[in-house]
Length: 497
Image (cartoon, rainbow, N blue to C red; front, side, top):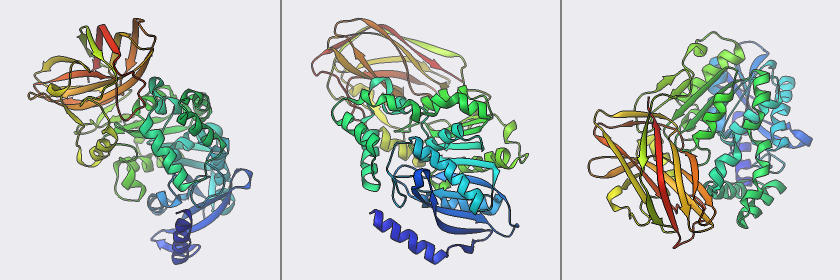
């Protein structure tokens, strides 16, 4: 497969020329080899503006996503070169496809490659080393944030479908996000060359020792580099999806709140990378439009007004127009008291969120929410609590929070909390969810659990319902079949706009 892609890239370069003047009006594209950290060869498409002099031009560096080659951003790059005069380098991350090296999970070499690409572009592509931005989707986004902490030349970063805390993304509340881990591992093996760190992490995961992987997270997470990013004054724009099945929005929202420099946060419906997918190809896209304006303001220095706009822009997960805030919403809240219940653990129910990943992708295009029929949920196997009706409707905006009093009978139990909007027929649309692992057989304990943040318009006459289950195919459940969980008096707090 890797050889096939290299052949396609060589053919594309041959057809375009290397370089090809005016491959598109106002830009030229060439296929280059760039020396990364340790001399590792990185394969890149370099897009340069034409017809506006010889530069130097502002520079944008775009590392590719996990398992995706350097052609990923060429459409957006050509558009940025033509319309705004950037030199753009879209390159394959080390260890994947046509680039050399091994996959190190955004380790020091991969992050250092960003600086090496900047060096190369300044020396070879008429780029201005004083006007530099970095951008990427997913793996490229995480690299961009880490590079912004390490390289003071980077004035602005745009991170789309990003992680900021790797452990929190793949191991929320000590629960393995099995679906995400399996997808990443399969894609890495199919399109790249795993290095020692990835191989060791996979071995630990397969052996049920995922907690041993957690220590590698800090050095590979922008959340641990927040002081460096703030000290550098980097302007950071983040765009993620509410239903991102790999990098959920809670970790991004918390990271955003700690940034002290220029910042912008856009959360919208969809799953991983779906909100910005077409924009990377150069097609009209509101996220990439903001990316372009972000770089125009903070890399080129253009006074385009984006810095005067409300920085937190949130599109409701079930449809509607963007809601704009000066900061992460923290308005009035409703609290629903949860009475005591006892359930049997370790059984599948119709309440689980196993289709979130697929339905989330559909939401990005068709706005189809994940649903469940609440009357069909077995109350012996799942806890179900219903709140009062919102006769005039309501908008949830922020992070719903649970305070649970629980007593498990088994030493380890995994709980999955789902918040639904429920209509008059008892049909529920999933708003948000969160897993949490509980340990200590027979020990009564109080858990403070934050569900994933959301913005959601509740219809007039509908109500909220909370369901807590013990098995979900998306995650690695550690519940013991036949054990029990007893819930004491608890509460759910829901923020409203």
